Length: 480
Ligand code: ADP
Image (cartoon, rainbow, N blue to C red):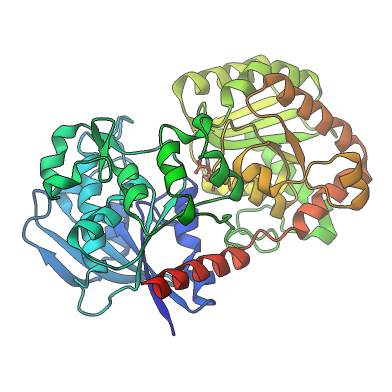
């Protein structure tokens, strides 16, 4: 029997992306179809989404959804069957998915994503005559109120909440509660109440039938005070329904043998062909050419990603003969510090501040290594792209990074199993030493190409994880 799943999320490639959530939501439907799951995606009607569904069918209408008229539209975008919440008073705005053009979050994000969650719960409740899901799969705090609405509607449709990052919680003042349309008893410890306010992610963790997070190690880490961000108590209460399912990558979008963003396409048998990409990266970042290692960073520039640790040791990295190409945006202080480092180390450190999908592909296809010094990392995708592209990952031992990269210690090298370098998180010395170790390994051509090839053999596809999601959905239905 085909199982119908509504995937409700605030981002999806290629329409709207601020991070890995978008890649995951965009990639999941196809591998799940092979498991007999028909997944349709529900997105807020931001301008880019509206433009993509322009000839969408009107499937449901609200006279008043959180202060304005709204409709649910249905369309196919590429291979994906999509629903969109067309609510101009909430989503027809410039800026990113969550923030104004200047970068500040919209003050009414609670209303925007409560409305989105309300509509997701309505679809699960049968609001669309043509399609009713068996399961509601909500992603992150922006959709996390949907399971809560289902519960207080008395609707038994099972729900899954996937936590892509527990740090983003959707916490708001208690004053918004009255506008959420929930019964008074929902403002309680076992409902949406969170430290005296309202917590969207907390509400979802409390009410979803099952909780998943995006790697087995992160699923363990969030049980602890250090990683639980205040929610570890609740996570521990719900251990019986918590699962860690590793993200995969869209191996069609990310394929070095067919990637149009590369100057030169290649396979593991012809790693020499990476040279043209390397030269393109060197030109783009204003870097000198030499035979030493070229490392890259492709990241949000934030404390979570350990970018301050990188800044602290960037002079040492340059002194070790490693060139560095950094693509990222985020924290203005970190952007400034990186640009200053590029000015100090002209030709050795290059920085592009901004978000550039094409360039990120080229960097994976041309750099020798990708550096990911995160303090915590629910899964991480850039190390998976690195593995697939022969761009050896240097990663902090945390979350999904720990689950996906095998450190190049002597035994692992001898066994042909090593795929990268793993170092202690939140530790600037360990980061600098890892970079020096990378330079030593890089000098041994046979060892280095062994690392690249082992990485490229690693299965980073969605195949295994799609089997696990499908099994989880089926187990929830058989319980109900
Ligand atoms: P997170 O979601 O925490 O930012 P992930 O590693 O899960 O981290 O996903 C990040 C995604 O965003 C990857 O697809 C990565 O390639 C991409 N990315 C991050 N920063 C940039 C950037 N400045 N330009 C292009 N792509 C970027």
